[in-house]
Image (cartoon, rainbow, N blue to C red; front, side, top):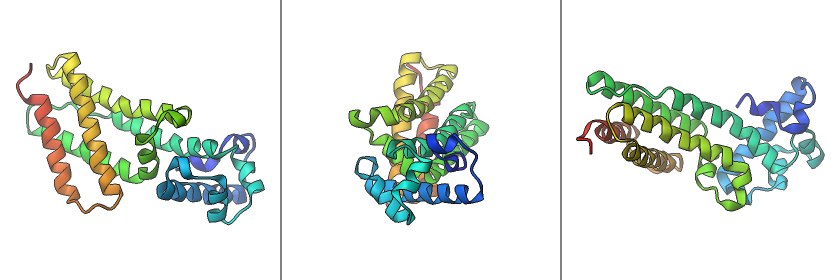
Length: 207
C-alpha cells in the first residue's frame, strides 16, 4: 500500500509531509473499506470522505476523483501480481517441482488476501469500468501467460497450454475470492488440492 499512500495526481505534484501522508493513509484506507463493502461501481467520493471523517476539499487535494483513488490502490496490487507472475517456478516432474508449485500457490493466496478488495473489483470489471481496470485485467492475464510458458517448456503445445493456464488462473482466483468473502474452506487443504490439479496439468500425458 506504500505507493498508494503517495496519493493520486494532485498529491504527486507536491511533496507530502507527515500530516499529508497521514491524511493520504486515511483516504486510502477508507477507499479500500468502501471498495470491499460496495464494489467499485457503487462507491462515491461522499462515501470515502464520510468514512475518512474528512472533507471533499481535502479529498481533492490528494485525488482527482474516485477513479484516481482506485488507480492509486491498484498500483501496489499490480506490482505484487507482476512479481508473482515473474516468480512462477520451474515445475519439474519430481518432488522439488511439486513443492515449488505449492509454495507459489500459497504465495498467490497470500497476495490475494493482501489485495482482496482490489482484485475482487478487477475480476468483476465490465465495459463501463474498462478504462479504470484495463491494466489490472491485463496483469491478471499475465499470470496465465507465465503458467502457459511453464507448460510449454514442460512439453505442452502452446495453444493447449494457454487454455489450460487460463483455466488454472480462473480456478485460483475463484477459490481465493470465496476465501476472501469469509466462506469457510480449509485454506491449507485447498492450497494442496489446487497445487495438485495444476501439477497434473503440467505432467499428465500431453496431447
